[in-house]
Image (tube, rainbow, N blue to C red; front, side, top):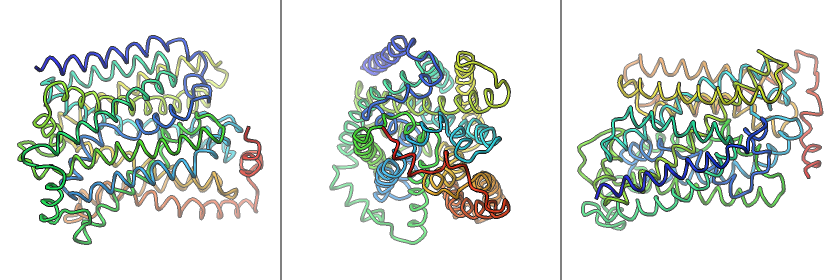
Length: 501
């Protein structure tokens, strides 16, 4: 019955190819390619946000490692993702991001920084950071998907990565953001169905004995809904904060706010849909991972969840779950590819290399950067798999934490407070890089520190530091310039909000 798995997989690939074909003429301009002309509906934007948020890293990496470390308490990570990472992010950031980005003509986060802070070179620095550090995150997605397909289908990981890169490149290159949001919507529906099937069959396994029995067993083993000791609590706290608060500073998530329709109803609907979607997908993924200690498994690390699923799911349904993870991964990869290629083409190429380039030329260069980003991510995934440098959880945590820490202060505070300026933004960029480098060296070089200084801990420290460093450096920088104000056009939030159509 393995042919059922291949049939489901083949149908999904055919569907994504069809989307690439039918949207190939919908991205003629740079705004079309990057933002869908800022007319993306609430449902499409919310699903695009959620599917970009959750990838194979969550389903394969975080679900397994968190379930093993925290037991049932791991579901708090999914709850945090829904409440902080989706609901609060949309409530606090969506409308202001949409209005301010349109008013200042920004299409990417670095371009927003340039206009908001009236800084000539900040776009270049931010654009390089995005292109460089989204690659490890993207590579972790490839690795997560590769482990699943290697165990379930027996397909070599290198073949999975190659096929994934080609398929993602095809529909992003052809249709840009329009193809991405349409595919994200389809993939989101698949993810919702797949999570329901995954939970039902995992908890029906004889070793698990149902949800009630599983909860009792986990509670008896000291892995109930609430951590039993301080060390476990803090480890869980840092994981929740990294994966939830970190989304506020990630450029691929902010990009969804730039593209959503600007009316109040669309943003409100997008908020509710995104939060509900995140709760189901995130909560379902971590709930599945809670049972890894209840089922005897031969594999370890990143291969735990793939083995668990292959043992409890019948043919056909295993194909559905494979497509679930594939959907989550492709949507994330497409979002990362668009964000990084947009930064490289608009913020670096158009901003500094060839300022006179017309829109057609920039659009073409952006597509080439998309292919380059996908190729580099796939190459790093190959290297990581064959050298065993780190797990996909650590790979994602470090890149997510560094970028989130670099941008969260300037972006979030810059939306609300007029006095935040380029000095605060630069200070946040530098502090995030230095904190990541310093703590990573300590974690690797000093015996006994790895249990405390973990990649999630490093990322959260970068974010907290950004909220402190950004206003302090802004105040000092402004004082050094004798109180010079940032231009009112790009910073008077109240005036910009009042101009919302």
